[in-house]
Image (cartoon, rainbow, N blue to C red; front, side, top):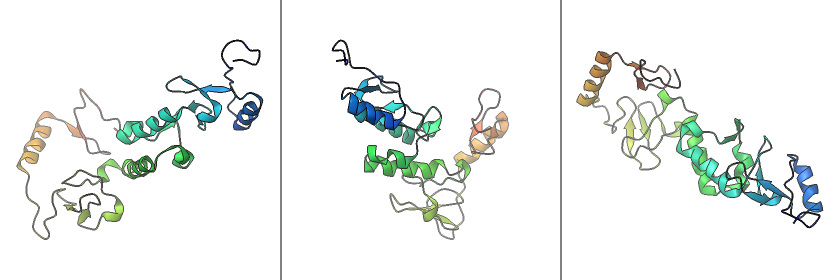
Length: 195
C-alpha cells in the first residue's frame, strides 16, 4: 500500500544507496524494478550495479551464468559497464564464482594463444603450460603444443590427413584466416568480429 493507503507501494527512482537506506527507514515497502525480468522487489532484495540499475537475485545470477557460456556475453555487464566480480561475490555461489574466474582467464587469453585439452576440451591456463606440453587440470592428460594432439614425447607430430584436406579446401576457395583469432572465414559472405 502507498503511504496514503491506496494502490501499490511506490517505486522510487533513486540510484544512490544512501537514499535507499533512508527510503527503507521511511517506507518499509519501498521497491525497485529488476532490469531484466521487470519484477518489482523490495529495495533490500535487489542488487544495485555501478550504473544504478537493479537486478533481482535470480536475474543477477543468470547474468553471470550466461557470461560463462559465451564469450560474446563476457564480462557480465549492464549499460556496457562491466560488473566487477568482487562486487558480485556476496550474491553468487562459490561454484559460479570459480567458473566465472576460470572463464575470465580463458576469454582474456588471445584466441590464437588458447590451448585446449585434446581429450576433454578443457581450457589449459598458463600455469599448466611448459615449452612443449600443456597439462590438463581436469583430466590430467598432456597435449602437444605443436600439433594440439596427445603428447607424444620426442616423436614427430603425426600429419593429419583431414587437416591437410581442409587446408587445401581453404586455399582453393580463397578463404582466409583471421590474423587475430585464427578462425577461417569467407570474406565474401561472412566476417570474423575480430577482423
